[in-house]
Structures are given as structure tokens and as C-alpha cells.
Length: 302
Image 1 (cartoon, rainbow, N blue to C red):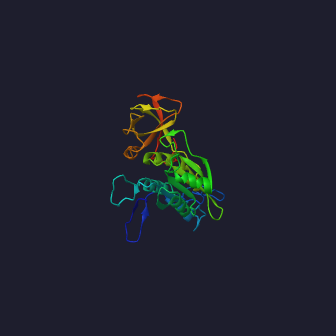
Image 2: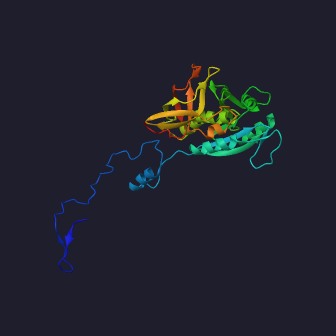
Image 3: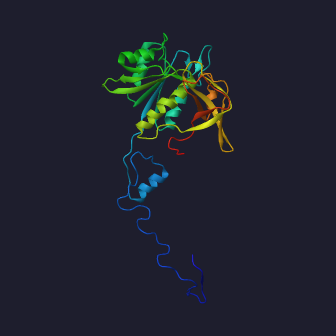
């Protein structure tokens, strides 16, 4: 706005000069001919969609969100809402994993619970063959009732079924062959709920992001001072659930309590996973540890 005064109705006297070009937006100030509007692999947020509209594009080529089939296994499992019985537990894995699938851009397809027999397990796995990725929990170890592994060995391939980490040692990766010959990738998570979620973060999450065309797959990590010791009894890489805080410019990590792989609240309280390398027997209080931040996006830059 410019200062002006009017002595008579219909007359305006400008009290200072208006430079030429004032309040004009020069052509090419935002984008010029030949500029790349959006790079391949860009996530379309509200700003990116607005940019596309600003250059007249009413559509763009995108990658389809992957459909991820999720299956829990075990005779001991009940669905939430069912009447509790002695010797039974509720299926936490299906819903925790499905929520994580959705969070990272996939479309979860819940297959329910497969009972501990070959026929039911095989039937349930067949229902997941239309998906882009199949995730199961339990059934891939060396027990008498681990039928997921048996089905995979008969109808697909298993690349490995054990990893050197805690929690989540019994973890499988392979493919399941569909009736049309298509090979559906399969990740078999452990049955313990904490193990399942920790393994999901390390294996399933980056797989889903890769299917979405993302290039930054690693969760951001920080260096934090430990306020609790981390013990490593069996030469595996330990992912300890921790709460990270920042005080006077320094990050600190406190464990969420007992670290049993059945204690799901140890995961719900955590915002990070403090890592003890496989070749380190103990990280004492005051040691500096790498902490993988669970709630920070993969694209964050330091």
C-alpha cells in the first residue's frame, strides 16, 4: 500500500513515487523452462500436489501402494473381543504389524489366525498370494508346530530363518509360489510381540519403502549417553527399547524397563532402539550408544 490523500471526491494525490515493476511477479521466479518440477521418487505431500497444479498438471504417474498380507499363527491365539480362556492370549501381532504397514505406506490385508496344523497354515498362506508382500508371525523356528516353515519349504524357497540379533533371532525370508507361478516375497517374524515389531522395523519397513520407490530406507540414528547398562550375553546385536531425551544439547537414553521380548509395553514406551553391537559384551552407564529413532522420518537430515 502507498500513502495517499484526497482533497476532493474522486481525486487521489500520491505522496511518493511508485517504482516501475512494484507488486509484479516476474515470470520464472518460481520455475523456469527446463527446470525439473519434481524428481522421481518424490513423496507427494500437499506442497508437491500444489506445485503440480501450479504448472497445469492434473495427473502424475505414481507407484501403487503395496498390498501387504498379514498372518498370525498359533492355537493359543484369540482375536480381541473374544472371551478370554485359560491358556489363551490375544493376537497383538496382526494388529500391531498391520498398523505399522499402514504407517509406512502399505495397504494391510489381515488374513486372521492360522491354527497349528499344515492344512490350515497352507490355506491361510494361499489367501495372501494376491498381495505384494506376505508377513507372518511365528511358525518359522525349529519347533514341532512351526508349519509356516514347512509350507514355504514345500511351495517356495527360504533364504534364511535366523538372524544374529536380539530380540528377533528366529526371522525368515523367502518366497512363496502362487498358482500362476508368481513369486511372492515373504518375511516371517518371530511370535513374541516385541520381537515382531523390532524385526518389522529392521526388515519389513525398508522393504515396503523400497516398493514405494523411496531411496532413504534407514531410520535416522543419533549418539546418546546411556543412563542404563545394556548387557549382551550371546554375541548378538541387541536392540534395547529406550526413551531418548535431550538435555543441554546432549542426548540421553534410558531403558524402558525389563527387556523381555514378551513385554510389549517396553515397546510402546520407547521412542528409540539403543544398539549394542554383537562384538560388545556390555555397554555400561555413561557409554555412548547409537540409538535408532523410531518416530523420526527416514528423510530427516542432520
